[in-house]
Length: 309
Length: 291
Image (cartoon, each protein chain N blue to C red):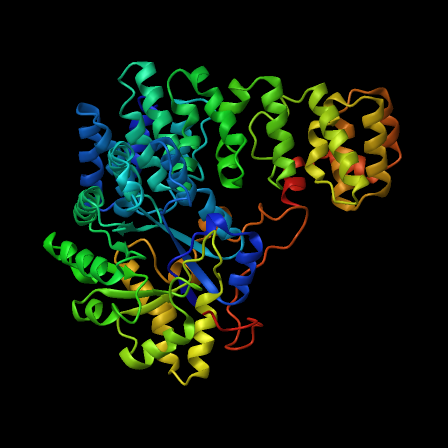
């Protein structure tokens, strides 16, 4: 079983859901982010947050995946002050929705004053509601941005065990772990981590508080990144216990602090959810049989080329 | 002795309290009181958000006398398959009904617009309890347009709102959509009372579409065809009676027995066993829905 803790499924097809389920991904988390272009008003934010707490959650369930999300104002759009103020005002409506496992993605993009202001405001909201935080570390000036994100989180008295630092690399992981935060790695071609590098990270740093995700979205990315990385780790001689932590247990422990995601959700779903939100068949048209994601034996799935570079 | 009649809101609160620990019940009643006196937006969002966390999502599982009280408080109200958190959430929503109609409606729309799936189910199930029913028709129709089957069913199933408020076109599309998405017809209230010739035609056309594509036709479809069947529909029923599987043939016989068209009787005479089963109520639409 795998938990992909960073997926933008609104950009993915039903084929992706089917392949993820077949490869053993039982649950995914959809962090609120931008759309590839900036939103122009709070209304489109409301509809987006409703979508990831609503139809996308339902859609995933039809393919046997449990779907969770995080809600928050991302750092790019924090630079539009009028939008940012309006989004901060509506966030409390969403923060306690079912399946919301964190406030995120938060953090810095260009480390502007406005980014800083809304990052801090949302850290306070997370603290008030005892929710975990997902921090997106910047693409540019990554090391400094990562250090600053952690310093600000600590300044606001957040418990590091409630904070996931995502999109790490070899240059950031040590400091993240040393400070007690969760270190997540997005296995994403070209701009983030490759999965052979991920195997080496686990070999060097072990599996405590480390996990990987796909960050699959509208760009060139791979929704099978987590199962592929697991297989690559297996072939690289990483222990099964470590693989399980990095691809399943650790993200579950981190986001489980919200109380909104637990193993029983997919292992023993309540009957009402089977009838309504999970494994029904209304996305499947005209008599197709619902595909129920039963995790295959290790190595039995054709994952294709395993490497993501 | 007849107990004094209570409002739906009082009943909801009493059901929640009876099924909660004393700490959870205290929380619930505290929130409810707060919402009555100081109806700030943030308070209701947090109360609604915490409802599942504090009270759980267990079945309400009403006792017979509680169901009777529901029907007495609001005719045709059927909360038999509601959950505890749904009852609590609707009690919170209704706590704001002392405001004037427009303010209640405006807040309800905001709640709908930012609801998660489980909240949507609760809010749509609450339709028969909201003041000024006619104001909520557009919202109810929005629910029946949903791509999420449980949302659709929150409006369509065990809910008196559509039969009371939907015009013929809205009603007909709800019934057709139920079949289209593989939902049952039997839990729709008023199914027989609101059958009409236009719906009969839509359903027969839909059956022909399915036959042309060699796809199965739900046996329940014929329930809304029978009472208004015209000659062409009688032919369709005769076809099902002659060629269908057992369930289909039973449905066709039931539909023909409800038909006023003079040819219906002739077709029924051709299947004396089935006709007798229908007459003796050994086969009912409830059985057909069960499959």
